Length: 179
Image (cartoon, rainbow, N blue to C red; front, side):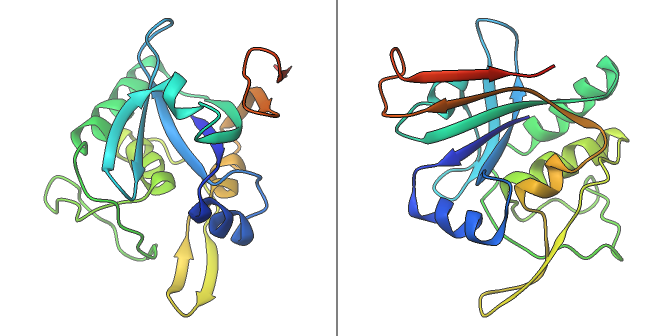
């Protein structure tokens, strides 16, 4: 997974509800020299974009890459599920843990970034044990999965974190790597 602290006003709204330091997440797919990020955004729904664009200073002031403990087979299944949702609309909906959704029988009517990741791994057979947060605001009531809920999974581990200070990624990029 790749998290970012976005530079748009909607990012401030997400970060006001969450203490993770990030406002958005995507699934890292591909291979070295051709990394892509599969994610859900308001203006395009579920989409795929190059990693360099996803973490560019115009879009991200901070980003981090997390590893999910899973077999190669589960990774392939999670990616296949997420790819099958390409083009679906962006939609923020509260999570109801009492309802089990059969994604093949009941196609999605949209998703948001963290839920796309959660559902992809769940469809592959891996419960990330993510923590949903109860929100009670006029336009958002219910349980929602915020970036910190994915980060809190016992199956995720921070690989690297970069901060872009001024936007000149060649001179102002500070990298901190943890293994």
